[in-house]
Amino acid sequence: MTTDLEGLLRPAVQDAPPYPPKMMQLANGHTLVVRPVERDEITTLLDYVQPLIRIERDFYDIVAARVFAELLGQYVNRMQDQYILIGQIDGELAAIVNGRTLSPGIGVSLHTLAFRRGLRIGAHAFAAKMEYHMDYLNHKEVMIVAESPIGFRRFLIEYNLEKRPNVIHELGGVPSYALTRETFEKARATLVVGRRPVPKALLDKARAEILPPSDPPTMAEDLLAASRSMYDSTGSALRGLRSKPKGEVK
Image (tube, rainbow, N blue to C red; front, side, top):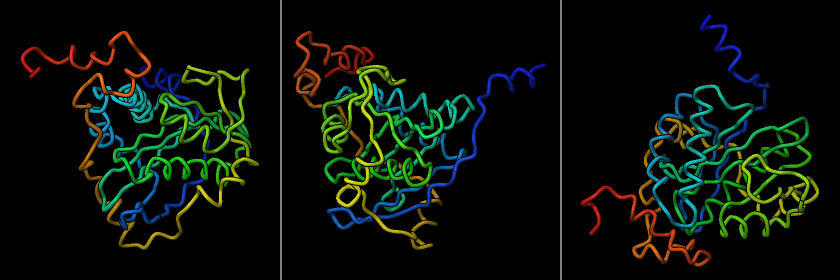
């Protein structure tokens, strides 16, 4: 009976072409490897995402909370047709991106979570997943929303996405924006970078172990300086301070 019920709870997952790993050189000379993850690697990702749920800065908290749920959903077989890609620098986790197929020809972008700032890692990882949607999953459109001003500028404006006012994204928030194939092709030359194949030694190092981020996002020194407070006069940027266990506040 338990086995039969589990079969009812699991979504039907369609076969999807694999994402071929690629690499790109960053502005600081380091190499970023973007690759898909295996199911047994998800628990490691959960460990690295969980601390960011308490980072009330640039909306890392809500993005991390949702990414954690999506990763966990994939691990326990409760997400339909989701893919997960990661970016690594010398094995170190630098980014997680994910999305899924909604229906034939239509994709959904879920999240882009960067663990290092200032090197356009998030932008490169986002471009990699749009490449996956268009070139490998053969989607005609990808539905996208943003949870932060940074994400809105970096993805919705930079790609000149089309509004879809009648399409409500599954993440909620504002109605969807769409990356069409035509828009993607216009952006490809300037925004989609990298080359294949990844040298075996470099790819083997990435697959051997997902090392923890060496410089993950942290809370702003002055919580009211968190970008959210610029748009919120209620002082909710102090939620992180209030939520700390008694005795931790200094």
